Length: 288
Image 1 (cartoon, rainbow, N blue to C red):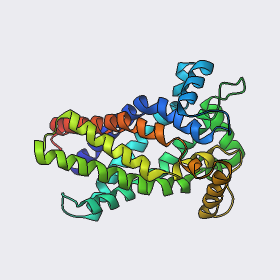
Image 2 (image 1 turned 180 degrees about the vertical axis):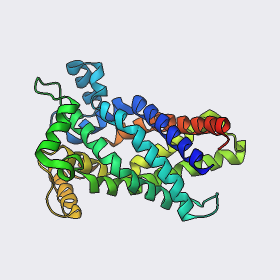
Image 3 (image 1 turned 60 degrees about the horizontal axis):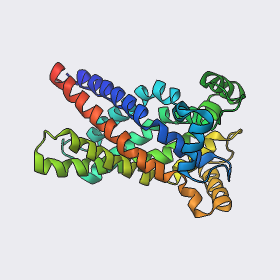
């Protein structure tokens, strides 16, 4: 039955999301701090890692994890379900071309931004705290954003930047994953070994981050600011790009890319492996 298949996709997406957060959060914290830390605070990703552990403790690397962990079930469920539905819209045939995969991935990314934007915003604001006595808990940050700015300018701050990031990111993500997966299937058949799924997931993750920069840097900065951006989305995105270049040069647009790429390998591999294995298990269990 179609609804059972959809439920299976939602459950598998939730399991995959939890795996992604648990595996990737430490390097995500390093990535985010590289993007948003005041100039001169850190010398590079390794210095961020060392200072964070030394000054705040090892578990500070998991700072901000509560937001994605609480929201990732919804985010990844929406993402994978949107991707499955988008593929049906793009083509009535089960085997899509890579171009069609890219279109479906972009559509899924646009839909995913609805939940991903607030989850990312709260995560970034938690990661932008450096162990001071005035650091706030997630519930305090959420209450403050709602009270001071409301839903659109507070909770959904950075939404349009997130949309702009997610469309190319997930177009690249799914295209690279499917390309790698199909190459392995041509050798090993449809039942791929786990290592092949892990490799395909890692390929997708690398493509995701290469496609999301420099928009990911812009998103993090917009979501961390004390006041919401003004003007049309393309105007404040352009202004942010100019500010980054004036502060740090062109390299500033790619801050955090190296930990992002490094993180993408285990995080994306675990995400896709968890999704594919869970969905296959549910398919065998439910027959849908």
